Length: 295
Length: 282
Image 1 (cartoon, chains in turn blue, purple):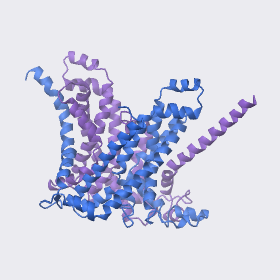
Image 2 (cartoon, one colour):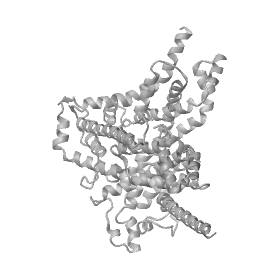
Image 3 (cartoon, rainbow over the protein chains, first blue to last red):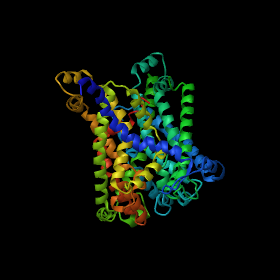
Image 4 (cartoon, rainbow over the protein chains, first blue to last red):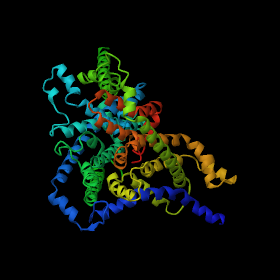
């Protein structure tokens, strides 16, 4: 082979192995999901083409789908407010510290690095109605609090799981904001101070505009991820009690691997991804309108 | 004079309130985990009566019992073996790929860039069902191979872009100089780029390890044989089977997260920088 030709081939030898492995395991199966959503299939036997029948069932007959989507929306509303506000406020406060900054950052981030399985089960133990924190509440004299079934009461189970996921999540958001705040040009603060701005005005006119791209990123991530979340709900309640915490991901999981309705599960996956894509563009649009993002 | 004094007082008051709030949040993050660690040294009875508190009598039997009953030696081995293979595969493929994307010119480069960029945000549920049934046909379900292959593939896009960004910052002249000395591209990569990028390879290795160690969904779906289960799924089974002994559940939690926590305490900066990168570029 002449050297010139060889030089043309080498880059492909470098990049194609990674591309092929990923395409075979992720992209091609993902595309096949789109096709298989049109089939009645149990994962083993011959699949039978049934057109849009799966989607018809999802939209007209299956009540749990609607319930799951509502729970995902509730999840979204919780996660687009609580961890963002908490993360932002703490990031602002920590950024004002000097030497202890690293220490705080390191501790706040710990819940994010541990396994969701463990975080979920630790809190399941704490929320155990007989042996958990209820014992502490009883001892402190909070009779009503000590009788709450945190994960057993359909009215609060979803909020209880969201609380735990928040415990693991907000530190990550805080570190993102903190990193962005540290990259804001310090001369802007000096200029604001020369103009007589107080701390609050600095926050509104320097800090927030300075990290607007990170805010937009966090919003997009939150919105999409809220419809994909799985681990904490599956580990802590698995959709129960009485479907009170059923979300799209757990419902898909049950259809695919418990009921062996692979075709139907695929149709649900298509809906789930479709919602994510729609929300992604909606969010992009809003962010641009709101001045959070440049073009 | 009085005005500055007042301002001084207010300043310290606000600083104090700020510190109290930050410390409370610190406790919120750390106490649940510290208490789990403490509870692993308390007896089951004590833990059940009062889940929060220090040990009255030190119960040292939880650790050996849980390790033994939970089959953690085998689970550790499974996770370590899987992580080792995945780290080697990911570092090799990502190293070569990121080198090509950052240093070489070729047709379709933009396509590959865009591909890995989009690939990061593909939802897992879009491909887990077909992957399961294809691997089932190939006889790979319920083997360590299945997880090794899947983790390797799914870890590629993020780390590819992470390393590419890093390599783009290394001046191309260094490799050019090596090339004039007669090095091939592969030799350039191995002798020039790799030594400089070592810290980033270490970061990626750690991130991949933590991902493999913590991963739950795939492992839970693909592995049903007890002796093949990695740590995180083994742990969930354990909490289900021995749920009546709370002290053991707390102990099992510590056993499960200990390696990750220790790694984190040793390399916290690498963790944080690696896990939060990508947010800046969006």
